[in-house]
Length: 124
Image (cartoon, rainbow, N blue to C red; front, top):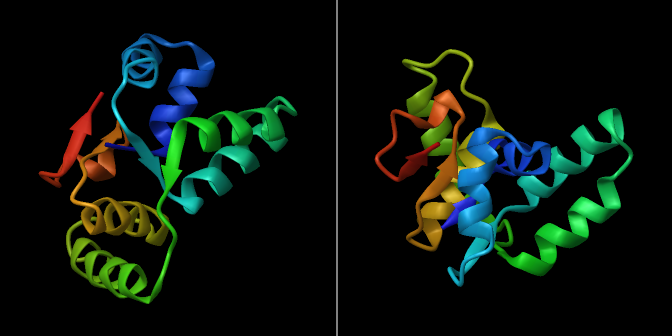
């Protein structure tokens, strides 16, 4: 399972949805994430609570990082181009996260509404 930025934010905030993420994070399930997720969490933490390094370390210790390569970049471009036909605000970062998950045949744990249209998402 790939944990996306939305799920990590809920986890770190300790919300009700974050409690669901906590169950997964504290389980023995192999978790993955994308460098894009790390960048989003780091940026959010720099802007809100100055715990960026602590959170980055935690994510890296708990998750295997799926490196972005040319294959993932092209898949992200295809996902982005197709999704933009119906979701005008679908971002390229979301496309990279989804492409990374598909590369490893994973599902994305998220609450981000942009992902609800994709069968490879687990919505919080």
